[in-house]
Image 1 (tube, rainbow, N blue to C red):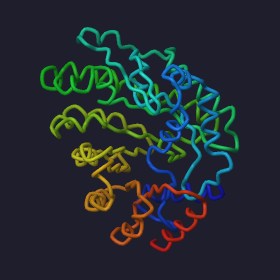
Image 2 (image 1 turned 90 degrees about the vertical axis):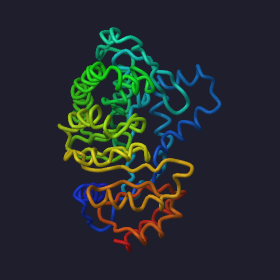
Image 3 (image 1 turned 120 degrees about the vertical axis):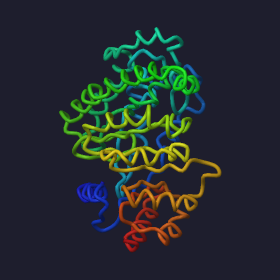
Image 4 (image 1 turned 30 degrees about the horizontal axis):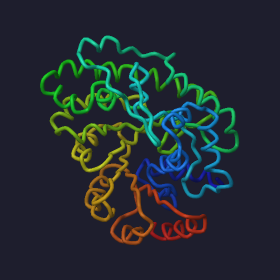
Length: 352
């Protein structure tokens, strides 16, 4: 990555809604790392896939193979993050994970409210220890080649939904709101010790703070989200989700809230009301939610209040630049080769 120092300066300017020479650009599409894993595991049996998730050398090697010989242009950072799926945080408390090709999901374990007493953070749990092993193995092999990040952590309503079941949690918010809040408090109360544990390991190894999104900082980076909120009203989010978000972001240097589609976007006013939410990542979804141009009014609305990440098809770039101002934007664009990336950077530089 020949312009690492300048790339970091561009990112820090972007956090302030400013531009040095151009907006930051990442030449990887959203969730591209999942597509890579899918290709590798497509022909495996369920048992073989499960074994691969827990094979430390396999997980690191597949990442290293994906970056071999690659030059990292723009703000495309080579980042390995230890990954057992988005519900691993719930697993640290005893939830069992079921593993597929590209992700895992929690099997709900709280069928009766008195079962909540069994939820205990266990830093000796097999999932916790495996994340530690993945981190350690990557740190042993990364020097001069790539960054090592921390795992995807979801301490809010997504964790409660993983313990209880998403549909059941919707009913609980009506019938058992106090029990929901007790579960939520358990989830968020343990977030900082878990985050600090892995942050300390990485900082002691001289690493920056970075996770699945691939945007590093020198401080404490976090990606709060609440995909479950697509299922609930604004009133319920304000009552149950917003207090958790306010606690989750409090000790971080940089927070980028992951807005996964229009269902989550209905809560933008509440999310943007939190001063410590510094950036919004807008993910427009699939199918009829493409192309990006239909979301220009929403993106402009966010951009007027906070910096924003946008995932662009390269074919939409010229149309997008024609109607948008570059300040406060971070573009994610999937590319085929290095020459294409160089050409795109020239076009974006002229826009600035």
